[in-house]
Length: 179
Image (cartoon, rainbow, N blue to C red; front, side, top):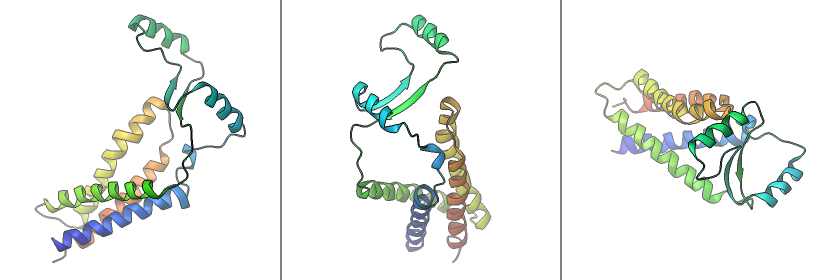
C-alpha cells in the first residue's frame, strides 16, 4: 500500500508539473489561443450580442425542423464559421483551478496505478506501454475527435501524450515492479 501511495504521489506531481510546463512555461499549446490585433473590437461586438455561453455559428434556432436545418447547413457550405466560448468577465485568479487540476491529476494517476497493480507481470515495458495507451485513448477520444469536427490543432496534445504519459510510465515502470 505504501509503495502504491508513493507511486501515486510522484506520478501526480510528474503530471501536474508537465501540464504547467506545457501550458505556461513552454507554450506547447500556443496555437490554440492566437492573438488578433482586432481583439478589442471583436470583444466589444460580442459583449453587445451574446450572453455567457458557447456558440457555434452558423447554426439553427432551437425547434428548427430537420428539413430546414439541412437547408441551412447546405447554404452555409463554403462560408465562414466560428466556435465561440464567451465569458462576461475574465477571472485571473488561478488558485482554485490549480487545486482542481491537481485533484484531477491525482484521480487519473490513481486509476493508472490501480490498473497497473492488476498486471500479473508488471515490468518497465508493460508500465510504459500501458501508460502511453491510457494517454493515447484520452487523446484520440477527446482532442483528436474534437479536431475532426472543428478543425482544431492538436499537436500540443500529441506532445503531451508522449511526454507526460511517457514520463509517468517510465516512473511507474521503474518504481512499481521493485521489491
